[in-house]
Image (cartoon, rainbow, N blue to C red; front, side, top):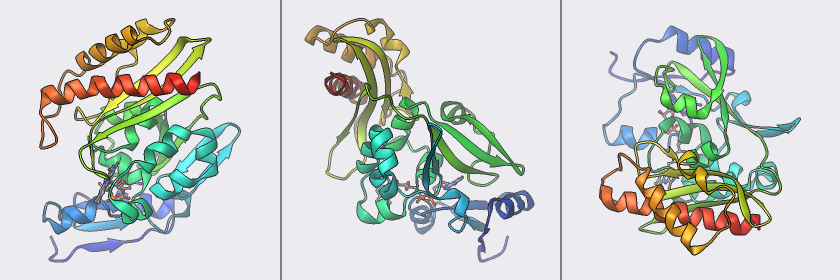
Length: 287
Ligand SMILES: Cc1cc2nc3c(=O)[nH]c(=O)nc-3n(C[C@H](O)[C@H](O)[C@H](O)COP(=O)(O)OP(=O)(O)OC[C@H]3O[C@@H](n4cnc5c(N)ncnc54)[C@H](O)[C@@H]3O)c2cc1C
């Protein structure tokens, strides 16, 4: 191991694949550095080689083609918030990106790719992407592979961040009749959430016809509780339904986090509160 880290700056995906393929352990992709650099500064991380992907044009920008929306992994949070394509087609994602704390620097430098790959329990983007059924393209062994984000999260063997590169996120536009909401419970303004929930609801008259609900910041990874609440399809919103949803959503959190933001019992209870609030707001918006 050399005393000083090396620095690689691939110009395109081909060069990135070549560099990742030629390095063994100790290499680390760096995008906005908002996660990597604090860890290096604290001495928690010491990459031997930084692979800076900021020059790769294919990783940048947001586009819409034939009803499919693509977000390059090096797209910063500010662009996700402000893009017309995202605001018009995926308002849930635009809103969730605006709830990220840390101020202007994090919004202007932090990328959607870095946020996803970090898979940090308290971050804001994954619940919305999961509720929206996002797919991702990753570059591994010189080839691009497409998979559901939900599947990527269950499998650590892809070596994202050192052996493979997240290229883009792919989403279908939300239907115009969909109601949505993202609720984040935070102790301090601009801080991390202690519980959050992303909901997408459709109604027929006042009855719920479809319900996607993901709860985050209460477990190691966001939890999809849509199936646990599937019995409520066909029902109209009421105070009684709200209470049932809150209780069922809490019970669906099997391994709650316990940290300085709150212990497990409280986190589980707040998961229910956030789920209820998100679904209620989504129902109102759909109505
Ligand atoms: C003060 C502060 C407050 C914050 N508050 C919030 C908050 O409230 N909510 C929230 O959601 N986030 C928050 N963040 C986190 C911020 O959103 C993330 O740090 C950021 O999105 C990570 O993106 P990045 O480009 O800086 O990633 P980097 O730091 O460059 O990388 C992060 C990780 O992802 C890997 N990586 C990056 N890009 C790729 C890629 N294309 N392919 C494969 N691997 C990749 C890196 O190897 C590394 O492991 C906060 C950060 C700070 C510093």
